[in-house]
Length: 403
Image (cartoon, rainbow, N blue to C red; front, side, top):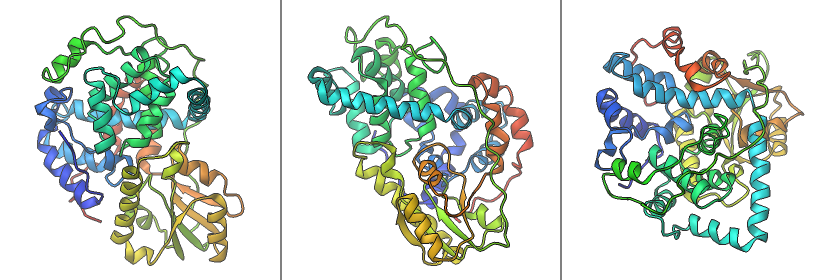
């Protein structure tokens, strides 16, 4: 079922309002089905990924309509994303290890013809595996896949096609509108058996047939009892980020990036920029060509954010791409500090880490400061703390604003 994701906060709010009545029992019972019941899932992920909608806004809306028991499955799924973010922030080397592994795998693709053919057939929906080719084509066309289909796809990629998991994670990041370094990398590692050590996810034909309503049944086509992928142990976690101190007395410029596009909180925090610029980091998600659909979606969301906050932003400088670009722009405007929403592990953070001539002030949302430190081990340890975290958040009903 094709999906459309208009790139605006208004569209995100409309999607949220349409879903919230279904965030209780309907979601819990239908979320795993990639069939006619697909309306059970929220399809909010492209907007959450870019924080066009924020987690507290979504939690507030869900819990205003349903009690915690009824909405528990939806709330838990939302916190999976939070868990992955916090886990990777405390182990950023896992992202770099993935990038290094991807480059090695890409070298192998270019030098090993059999691997190259398997990789090409998987990316172009020509494997002959029932379901898999449909999902590959759907992803390339729409920028979206149902979560259960993502799990099946990743399992088949790794264990049946025997392709490096890093190449599959990259295929997703190049095409998903909600492609996120934390959620995507760690989900692929989880399927492979690298995240929960020795516990992997193996797609089964009867499971696929059941949850696709019989649309697909790759009986006899899938690996039956593969071993999990082996790898080094997890690095020890570092301290969760706390954000930087902001001095409103210093001349500030604002840098907008696609990791956080609900900008109102920055202005409420006291940021009054002398100038604003946007960072174009989308192409840095992969060493290969990123889908034009992904790049245009990100760019349109940035433009929507600028339009919504034009009173605070004015006419920004657009599409800075490198640390040098940022330093040159900020210096020309007499900046004493560059203020930005905290960029989590990924392309924007990598670029900003290269800015040294002018201090970069990374402001961290209260939600992240509260939740990320709980991602020290497995998800289920964090899940036990969800009620207390929700209690600590300000989730009193508030109107959803298009700004």
